[in-house]
Image 1 (cartoon, protein in one colour):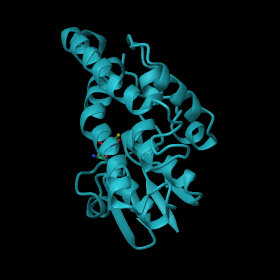
Image 2: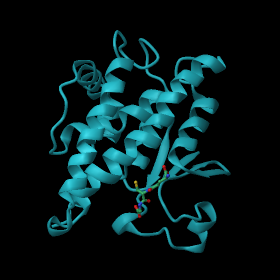
Image 3: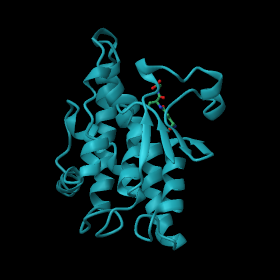
Image 4: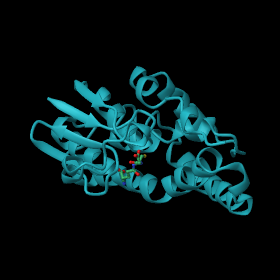
Length: 212
Ligand SMILES: N[C@@H](CCC(=O)N[C@@H](CS)C(=O)NCC(=O)O)C(=O)O
């Protein structure tokens, strides 16, 4: 029995839920965090001492950190396309996954998204915002090159790296900022939008997070 603790508006919860759906696994998600609360109890802190979401429970196996959860799910339940057994093939994909978490997410989620959605209008730092938008364009140009001639990052089929990279694209394409015109990236995003699991778990309205 798999349970995820976390609210559906959290991008880190979304990537875990999307992965579970693509892997065909049944999951019970319990709204936790944000206005739902529940992350400050001793029981929750024993599962995630940071008091953040998501937490995954796979029977008595308990984990936090969405990227680690994704890798666990891939290794435990993924086939050779989703989670290649070949270390070199998987390593190449993991470069993109890690780059997403450590280079893209800080710019897109913790700067652009945070400025536009989670910061009161009078407190927004527009100079920093412009710098981050320019950084975003440079980073997505790397993704554009990576996607050339491919339907997905591993070729014709979805892998764990697409979950990590693709889960931020809904916000990337729906937030109000100037995006560089990148055709491979847009075609890739359109392909993700065709997937039911992506629509169900990633294309989640975030207007409830909007301050002011
Ligand atoms: N590195 C962690 C970050 C987790 C994180 O920052 N979660 C946010 C939501 S995206 C959170 O718990 N915010 C507080 C809350 O929702 O109560 C991960 O990838 O799981």
